[in-house]
Each structure stands twice: as C-alpha cells, then as structure tokens.
Image 1 (cartoon, rainbow, N blue to C red):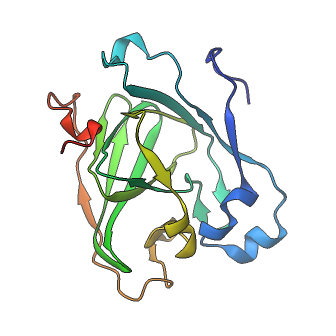
Image 2: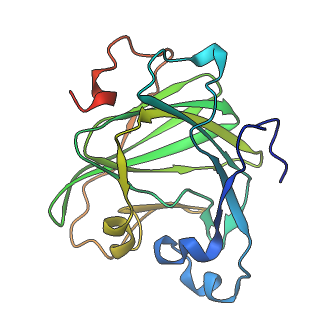
Length: 204
C-alpha cells in the first residue's frame, strides 16, 4: 500500500504472522499466507489541524485496510502502557472500534469498547490495554498522541491470546484464555480534544 502522502517516514508494517498469537480464528491462520495487515507511521510531523504543542508528545498515524482474518475483523495487535501514561486517538478516515480492558494481575476488572467515526476522539486512560478494530469495508486511518517516554508491553496480551473479547462476524466473543471476563460495556467517543492533557504525561 502507498504511503498516502505520509512521506516523512517509511511505514512499519504488521504482518499476519506477527499476530497469530492474538487471533480468534487460529485454524484459519494456520493455512493463511503471511500478508501485510496494517501500516504504522511513528513519530511523524503532526497534522497541523490536530496539533499538540509539546515536544514531548509523539504523533503517529496508522492505516488498517479492511479484511476478515477468518471469522474475526482485522485489528491491531493490542498492548498495554508501561507506567501511568494515557493516550489520545482520533479517527481520520473510516470507522473504528476501540477495545479496552483493565486488569489487576491475571484478573480483568473492566472491559469496554468505543465506536468512533471520522473526527471523533477516543481517550485511553492509564493502565488500560487496548486494540483498534476495522469493522467496515473501507480503509481505516487513525492518529494518536502519546508521550515519548511511554513504552508499550505486548507480552501480557500475547500470553492471553489477545484481549478478553474478539470482534467477529457473529459479534463479540469471549476469549476462553481468561478465567473470568466482565460484561462488555459501551462508551461514546468525544467530539473534541480534551483540555486537560495531564494523563498523557504520566501525571494522571
């Protein structure tokens, strides 16, 4: 896929084989080729329309083409933040589902999702693991802001074969790798950038 005018940096590509451990339809994944799933442009020049004036904040964009991974809609791998850092997303093109879960040790204490369309914002509170899903037949393009100091942890989600729910053609399905899964709830996106950005800096 072309860089869609993001000429500043070459995309980091996530391939199917990078995702095998977190997919719902593992029988399908065993026979599928190792194709490109989505494209991440990290630390690029901020879109002037949605700019946060702080050199500590990193701006990324991600392109997720539409695809079914067997029975499951295409998604990002999912990760948690190390430390007390939050994050902000905005949908630039298409529609997205953001899935969030908060755990204490092995137990998930809270899980919810947000549906967002172009121009809507989604806030990620500290200590919530999260993944982005493209449930639509069009390319999804999202942007995010987070602290340069923030590091991502993928291992805890990989060990559990993904977040505690999968989004499939049949709807939401619980991940059986979790002993106990809370009821999935829904939250609305925000219409504008929040004024208080302290949660981005680990000061939340």
